[in-house]
Length: 191
Image (cartoon, rainbow, N blue to C red; front, top):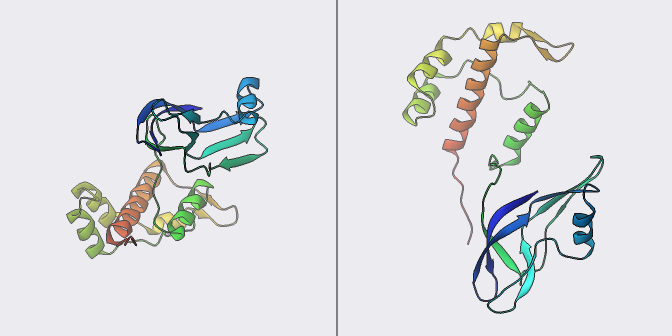
């Protein structure tokens, strides 16, 4: 898969609008496979100064049958920096691995994480003041029968037997807790 990008030459600073590879499925197209072996994936030559090298951007590689996966990050820093990527897929940003673990667990169908309602009234007020939840959402969080959520969990099968409405409230609760936690976090950057 190629994406539109703006590259900047690491030598002279000339910018180039082009397409770069972001993901490749090996075994799908012979010409693309050949480009890997000929070092032609994301390799560019600057028209202005003649500098040549790879675009510094990770490329996801996977086997056609999906059994093997890899990530390639070029180490040639004399090549081209990717300064803008168009048609990109949005990613959620996590500031610590603990948050990421919760997210991965939910992707894999898990439920037993960071779910400890009811939320405290002061947390709801803070979230409302920070525009994390609307007045209607705050009222839902205040007046939900949280015990019914626990009653509808089948612990032997690790299944949730929630109604569509309960699932929506659960998603609201998780978004509320996650965004409130992020809003309180101070991230410092070292120089």
